Length: 239
Image (cartoon, rainbow, N blue to C red):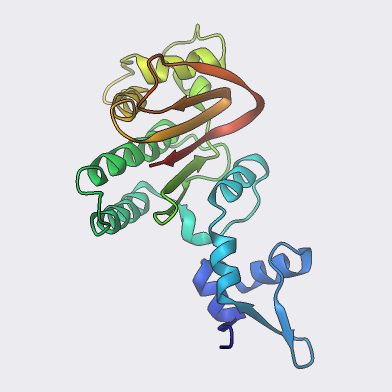
């Protein structure tokens, strides 16, 4: 049985990127095309595109660190785009056997993390606005990321005495913080913690050099200092 090949136009539509992006990825070796004829026509194996698009954590990490391009299907430039994709994910979860009681909570946690990024960076994005939002329900993984201000700089607007990323992230996940009306900074992540520790959900969350790893069996909430400084925020959920 022959492998299904897609033209460069079909591959661009599949990944949600431009033709020029695919050409750059081919030339750099990031996603190599199959050349046919005189070598001017590029084709892609559908299976290769599936594998390429499944490395969600790699795409998100490279984007927030270096601004490296990723498949546009994961980019949510506005909160309305994010919430539309969130509803699509929720519907897909509803169709999966065994998720009858969990799908709404997974959607809730995902929504709080994504909305948190938009609320905290509204009108203050350092460069690229919007968030990365990708999921693979077969692998049971969801990844979100932003290139925003990060938790420490955001909370210092109402708690200027916060000394570090670790302390700021701990505050965001454990305290009710009221900012100037109508914004309430940090409360979305507090709800995230309350849900995760009661459900079969594993969460990794990082901002600056602060890292949080949570799962239902954890008795104590801890924020640790990581080996690298992450711009904005990065989250990975497994369930």
